[in-house]
Image 1: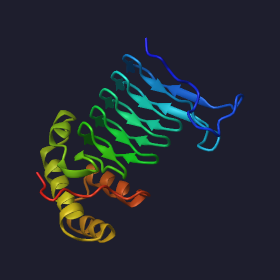
Image 2: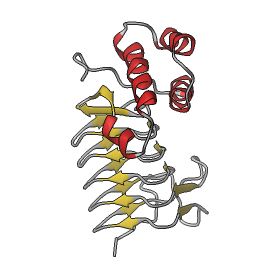
Image 3: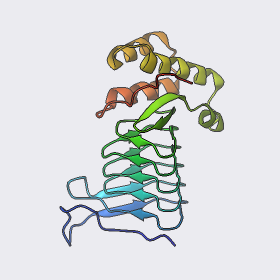
Image 4: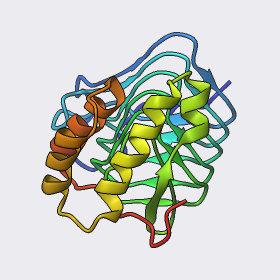
Length: 205
């Protein structure tokens, strides 16, 4: 059974604070996984969705929101207030900074340092992490049409390798790329990003 650390690991938490940890259905918790309740300042609740796999020593800090069907490899670590969408793969020993947003179907390489938002469908790695391209294998496993994968590759080229400012790149994507579901989600994510996106690699794959 996992050992769950219910109390938030912050100095502001006081005994008697009514804060919560909500866990959905079908999750797998391996050895020594820890999770913290929310804080009053952060809304009061840490939320875990359904069918997530948390491998040994994975950690979810206070006020995090974790969606569905995510994989946390060994010692994958979320700091406070992190949002993880759906079908994200976080490599072993990867650390996520406070308030970072991880987009759906992103894949983060092991031992990565994530200090800014990771775009949905992105493949990233490094310390600090950079985007290397689109998570083609993850998209294939999710049965995303090949036509949409090709559009995402072009959108990533514009976002990360065109030299354009992000706002200008988004405008170009909206104007030039067909608005399939995956492109719509990517555009919404970029527009809503508060920490900014991680950078593109010098040599995309």
